[in-house]
Length: 222
Image (cartoon, rainbow, N blue to C red; front, side, top):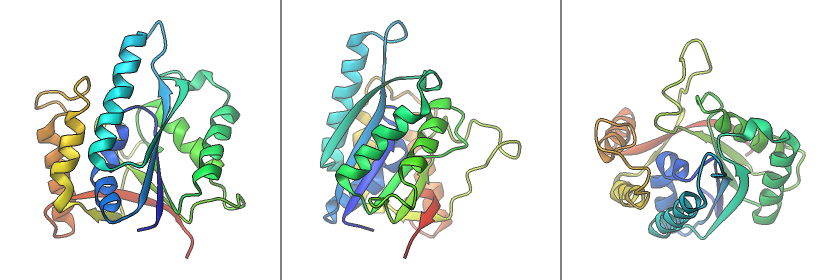
């Protein structure tokens, strides 16, 4: 896919849910993969202990996937609508400038969570084509319980047009998700191992593979 990949995640675990198998595959194939988590839990909504636990889980999950570096920003989780848009734009721009990724993965604009929508917009602002460090390719990923819980046909719908075969890396993705012990849930919850496996199987069978992750191609410059 590329030599450098940057994944922007609104919250810890979004990157594994949406891009975990792809990260594992391309890291194994020699790509440098960087993950930036935009928000952190802040009082009174989240305790400092919960925030630190989430970050420790993220680092453990990224170790399983082969992430080269994890970057934690500090915008308030579930409160990005209270933060000046330009501040988020600027910090994501600085990440793009620093790592100069060939490929950028961002959350889908149609997700039900406002943080995801804000991160999508800020990522596109930071990756404007006139930015000399702009990535050549930008994909939007799907996040279980966020992308599919919006109102399709009333709001923008996730219709993937790029599929990454993760058949040899599905178990790695599931292992990484298990590192998020505070987020994984028993089936039939959407954030269960069974549901993750089912979605990967569905996306894979769509393109005649055992397992895949699906993306929406936002922009590609060839």
